[in-house]
Image (tube, rainbow, N blue to C red; front, top):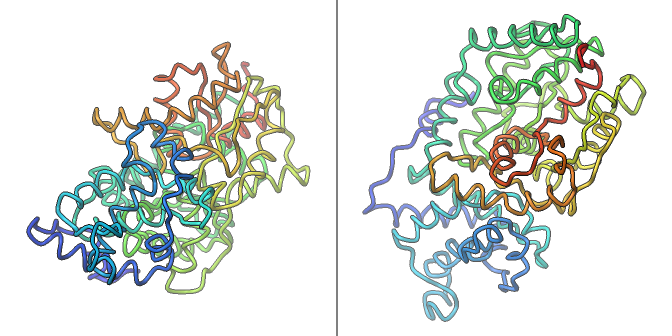
Length: 452
């Protein structure tokens, strides 16, 4: 568990404006010298323009500052001016520009307009990952005390309760009991959602949004575990697959959430951790937990859809695709496909569960982001308008599949942040589809509704 100084680092007071430039330059030097991908981004970009037409935020807004290389320039110009000989000697001739308070405020705006989708890295001839630049920029802004309200509130709620919604254990228990009643009424089968059950074989880590916004996803997971007779539980101390530390503070917040997870796995004596439907959360669990932990990982950590694909492949699930007889398309969450190699597993799970699957174009690792990635889910009018603009490319993809032509299509999104973004997107763009989680459809295919 993190020590007291690290706990204090989770909640940083804003640096006064008259000190921000000096502090920012100090942090910039530390970050660029420590992380080689940042140095690559500082030294190698030739402004070829490949990233522009592959960035949905730029395509949706046509704001030049949303071109990935221009966004990275907010860092690059300041780095060159302060820390390179050519920048000090030749200034703007070599793309150097002294850091100012105005530039820091632009960083705050544009680093939080980047969805961290990493599509720019896919097409860059030099392999520059601008996502790493904006991650570093957000870390720098956190150290200056500049964090959007949503991220700050979610970080605080996670610290207090172990989930992003701030739901305490009694609320969690009540919600799960309600969902158990819903499943009994729907299927005629008594399916339990256990919480804090010691000596369980599996600790399931859902997104806390599955208790409020996506109840069918929580019920789908419960149906899956029940069907297989798996001895499973959730934990009231870590009922959250997401880790917002990845999105604004990788130094302390992400590590604190990681240790909370591992401590609870040991406490409950589980044999395996199964991650739920959250893209950035699984990227954290798969790629960062081993380096963040202060001890060996005590049990395997796997994703729910790796598990589901295994049981489908081995014939242990009897699926009824006719229960999902709607035209269906799949949104590939960016972190699943460009970071975690889940693209084929998602299809291995989805295709046997539906009768009419239609592929988007492009798809898999070349997909476009939903426009809400990295929790750009703000509801104030300006940012909400940007969210809808960011989703324009995804809406175009969905419309091209034809699944919404009769108003009864399914848009499958196996990620809680994608779902939160896509709910308003389908309404604003009038797509005629219903947003579903992938495990939702698995649950329905395992236990068809008795009154359908």
